[in-house]
Length: 270
Ligand code: HPA
Image 1 (cartoon, rainbow, N blue to C red):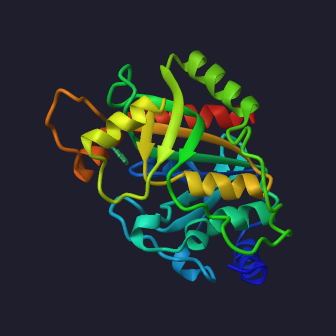
Image 2 (cartoon, rainbow, N blue to C red; image 1 turned 120 degrees about the vertical axis):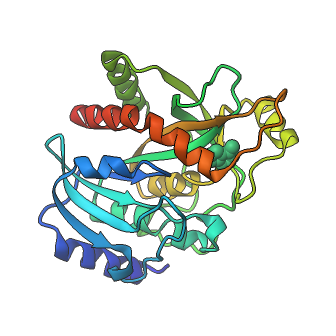
């Protein structure tokens, strides 16, 4: 996606909203209910935004929602673009490009992920401390310096200060907050037992099919990132139970209230 195309998408979005949002939020599988908490909503359908793809997965609506959450101007992605849907990486990450050019400083990313850490339970929330990328890097190709530098550091992809704010907020709310490394594969097939075991061996706590490309592009564009996963299923080497997308969505539902509460209260501290 060229700088000019991203600028067109940015200009369209800016023509619909009155102020620059301070925070952008990506709502993952089943986390759409956070959007209902946004006041004075302006809804912009992806299909109306120049160069935006349209998401195809169940549980993923396709809107940007601008408004106020806990007295902060926010813009939410209700539905994200996945590599496994067949989009190119520059399509998967188009919104992060636009957000960074808009001057939005903070990105909160949420997702549903499979737990591989033995101490995790279904419905836990995990603060992403770092990631391991098993997807193609979205920055492959010619680098336009107007977006960011050729070799961006990923030394602190998940901002320390934002992580500390999340930890403090969870404590205040009495919400157990797990922490760990998130690994991203392409999907759409779930992992084999051998793959889940490999992730565990690598020190990964949760695995999913999204988020990492968005984070890389956001960091490339100078944004600070906070990542939170809902643990929708937990790998158990002694069980034959299958992962299903339905199970993922149902388990996320139960944890959504916790997540909504957490994100709302973290925002107050940003
Ligand atoms: N693996 C990959 N992605 C996922 C999983 C999983 O077990 N659960 C939710 N998203």
